[in-house]
Length: 111
Image (cartoon, rainbow, N blue to C red; front, side):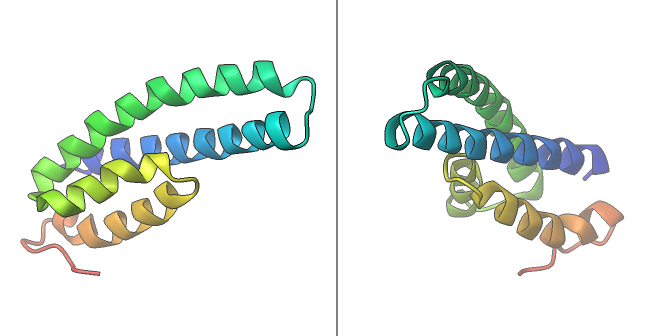
């Protein structure tokens, strides 16, 4: 597997994770704290997160198919972009697991 496949996934995992944290903070500001400017912020971040999550799905699926993951693992990685902060932890675990495969070793490390 090429390093670029893993790098693209990692970038989108971080971007998706940051956008989801911002969206969560916007929703808290809008509905719990009743901050007046949170409505526009939440709308913009929600749209951006939605489109970026689609890109994340494509890249995570590409990575999973090249790494030959079982369906359950692929599903967990795909859903990580919908749970605030989960994308960061899943990305770290995936990177550690696939680093030997990217470096040229035949077997990925099971974490």
